[in-house]
Amino acid sequence: MIPHCPSNTRAVRRIAVHRHIHVQRIKSSIPLRSILFFWHPFDLNLEPCLSDEDDFCFLVSFVCVMLKWKRSWKYMFGKFKKLRVLSFEEGGEGYSGFKLSSAIGNLIQLRCLNLCGIAFNSPNIPSSLGNLRCLQTLDLRIHADDGAVNVPNIIWKLEQLRHYLPLTMTDKTKLKLHKLTNILTLINFNTRNCFVADLSKFTKLIKLGILGPFSIDDFKEELDKNLPIIASDCLRSLSIWNDEGIDPKVLAHLLSSCVNLCELILRVKIEKLPDFHHFSSSTAYVHLIGCMLVEDPMPTLEKLPNLRVMELYVYAFIGKEMVCSALRLPKLESLNLSGLRNLEEWKVEEGAVPALRHLKISGCEELRNLKIKWCKEEKISTKSNTFLPSYFMLSTMCEIYHFFLIKNL
Image (cartoon, rainbow, N blue to C red; front, side, top):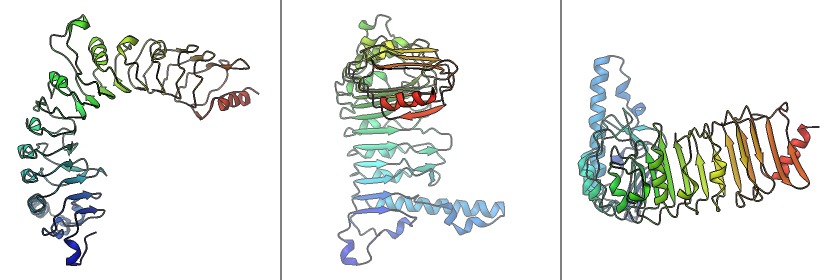
C-alpha cells in the first residue's frame, strides 16, 4: 500500500505489493530502499487491447503491450536508484515481457536481487548486471521459454556476493567464479557451466548445490593424489542432482573434501555408496533418492555416529533386504522409507534405533516381512502373508508395536 498523504510518502522506505499495480503509480520522489512483489508485476489478462480476435490486430496490440511493459521496467530501474532490495517472490511463472531490461544495471546500490517469480521469452541475462558491485544475494531462477538461461561471464565482478542461485543455464554459459571469495550459498553449480577449480577459492562456503554434470579433468585413480575439491571447512550442506549419474571415485573424493558436512542430499544414480570413511562424521541428515543402490546402504550409513535423520526415497535402494544392526544408530530420530518398491524384508535388531521417534513407510508394496526387536519384551514380526498397507506413519515405536499387535489379532 502506498500512502496518499504527501507528508507520509517521504518517510516511506519499503513497499510490499500484494496485488497488481502499475509500476508508474509508485512515485519516483519516494526514496525507496526496498520493493517486494508478492504478485506478478504485469498481467496480460488486464490488457483490454488483447481481446481482439483478429490475428493481425492481436499481434499489433501485443507488441504495444510489450513496449509499454518495457517502459515500466526502465521506469523502475531508472527512478529508484537507491534500492537495496528488489524481490519478486516465487508465486508462479509471472510473464513479464520479452527479456530482462539492461537498465537493471542502474541499481548500483542493490544488495539483494530476487528474480525467481518472473518469466521472459528471451533467456539472455543482460551484461549490465555486472554493474551491481554491492550485490550480496542474487537469485537468477528466472523462467524462460526453453527452461534455461544464458548468463554472461560477469558474475565474477560481484565480489561482495554471498548467495548465488541461478537456474539451469544454457550450454553457451561458462562462468568464472574465482573472485567470489565471500560466497556462502552456491546453488545449481556444475562443471558444464562453471570451473571446478573455482570451488577451492570458496573458503567460506556453507551450502553447495550441484545440478547437472560434475567431472574433473585429469582425475587420478588414487584419490589421495588429487587436490581437495572443497577448501571450505564451513561447508554444512551438500546436494547433488544429476540424472546422468556421477563417477563413484569423483563422488568419494568430493565427500572426503567436506570434513564438517551435516546435511547430504543425493539424487543421482551411483549404485553403491562410497566407503563410510569418505563421509564426514558430523553428518546428521541423509536424503537419498534415485540412487539405484544395489547393496544395502545400512552397513555404511549406520557407521555415521551423529546421524539423526535418514530418508530413503524412490529407488534409493533397489535390493530386497535391508538390516539395521544392533547398537549402530544410537542417535537416529527419524527414518523415512518411501518408494522402495523392491524391498521385501526389513530387519531391525535389538537396540538398533533406541532414539527413534518418527517412522514413515510409504510405497513399499513388496514389503511383507518386517522384523523389529524393540526391546527384550517386545518382538514384532509379520509373516509373508500379512498385509502391510502401502502407507502408514507412526510417531513412536510404542505405536509400531500397537499397530502390529492389532493387525495380527
